[in-house]
Length: 227
Image (cartoon, rainbow, N blue to C red; front, side, top):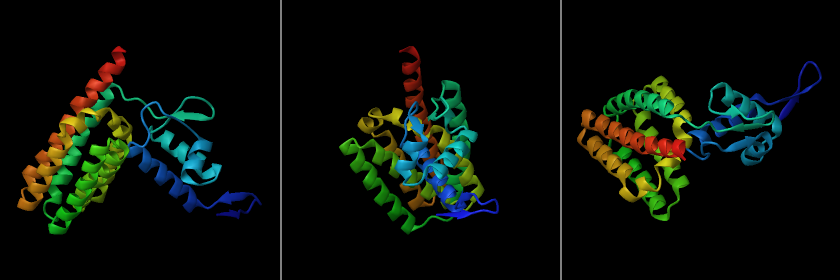
């Protein structure tokens, strides 16, 4: 796990630090943490099963990316997006995710549809159980399975950076999104578009999903501001 460097000091295996960073980053983007949640080095270390050094390094890297902000010398919080922040993220997401979806149509096939259907089953089960953590986890799998088929990895990285910003806010979609099944309909439209090889319809399905989510999240931001 660690090694001695030239100065005789113990240095953490850089691969362990990278793994901790990737794991914490992924948890944030999937909405495991909510806006305003407090994290400490100790809590992150315990959650990820690592020592304090890689946990601290992961936190420091994510604060430099504005995915976390310091609330004290030993505490960071998940930032709360303003309405302006949310609008900016949404505009960027529509452009990037729409493009990725459109490009993905060229490379998607029956196996991809089967994978998406399996993920949607998990999403539906989570909605029925009101297990929104599971819903959010599988929702990202659904979206990024499609985006990966664009075969444009830099584009996918740009999309992931926006999910890092907005992921914690996704809890604001529920329970309304669960009751109305807005996201389910968009995903069904996406799967139909892939089966038909319709790139414009696939792009439209993801853009509609993002727009509907934005309207719900904007309402949540306004409700919080007026409280």
